[in-house]
Image (cartoon, rainbow, N blue to C red; front, side, top):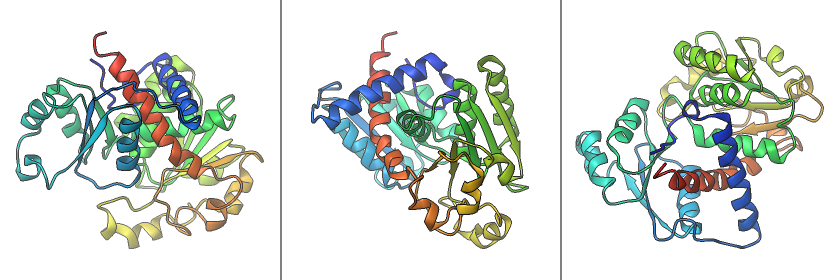
Length: 308
């Protein structure tokens, strides 16, 4: 059985299969053609961290595929009262057809998947956010930027940066990551990405100079500096991230036809200026919509791999 925990678990060909399927289902959806790819299937959605886009996109997606989503917060189930993840997994996976989890420690997600009888999807952990990167790459394809792609990630070396590393390493494009000192990506995740890059031909560089990262890039992306649960660090991070805002001056360093992406929520005048966020190069809302379509492709693809 296949799970969707991190892009590191997939080949380039498998990721392309999912993206092709996502584009097909998106085209059908835009034409108001709703096929029951997953008739009467139940998607259990476990949220230890709240979300706007993750809940709406998964719940809408499973409904449009012919199934139903079941929202489960940690306040509503025994997991929030100390039940082991392994027990929760063995119970819930006997009652639903697929599970999406948005949690903190990646190890908790892995434990759930280890005991699950159904496919498990990572809706976000502290280490990875793979469904977001599938939406990002879907947007890149639609915007005609997948050929000769040079992506620049400016900001915190967080779960999004880690997932960009894995996407580049698997798909074989150039990725430049610029973070402030002390906020670099995890060394073990970088090492794994570099090992994959040797096979795919990806060019991955990490450093502390955002201008060097953005120069002639065809895609520029960032993320909030203060993630959920880090509110107490806001004042210090604003100081540490000085010079890392993606503003008009920064975007002028990129390729003239470059696009700007942001996974949202975005905090204007912190990681991105209002002028860039609302400007003609910004594709953030196309990207946000593609969470729905990419995740539908993931769910249908996983369902088709149950007996492989």
